[in-house]
Image (cartoon, rainbow, N blue to C red; front, side):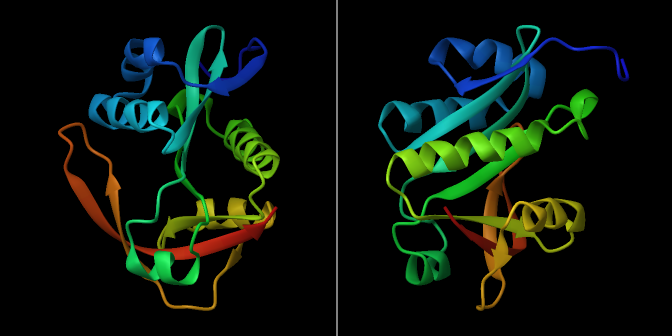
Length: 167
C-alpha cells in the first residue's frame, strides 16, 4: 500500500458498533470488547483514528485505579495512556502522535493535571516518541506490567518504564 494519498484522519471515541471494524482491522477482539465495555461503564475511553472509513489506530485511556501497585501508590488518580497502536500499513505517519494529543486534550478538559504511561523497557522507539511529546521517566524503579496482547485474552508480563506528563 505504501504512501498513497489518504483521506483526512478523524479521531473519535469508539462506539460499540465499531467492534467488527476494529477487530477486522486490528485483530484483538477480546481486548476491544473489554475496553468498549469498560468505556460504557465510565472506566475509560477508547479513542480511534479513522481514515477512509477504516480504523488505522487506537489508544485507550485507563481511568480506573492502576492494576500495578507501584503506579497506584506513586500516581493515585492519574489516568494511564495504554495500548497505543497504529495499523502496520499506516505507521510513521503521525497517527500515534495525533491520538496521544487528542487523549491529552480530552483529559485536560475533564480536569486532569497529568497523565502517565508504561513503556516496555526494550521499546526504545516508543520511549523516544513519548519523550519528544513531553513525557518524562518517573524517579522510581521499573514496574512489572501486564498487557493484554494476544487474541486469546492471555496477558503478557512486561518490564516497563513509567513516564509522566503534566497537562
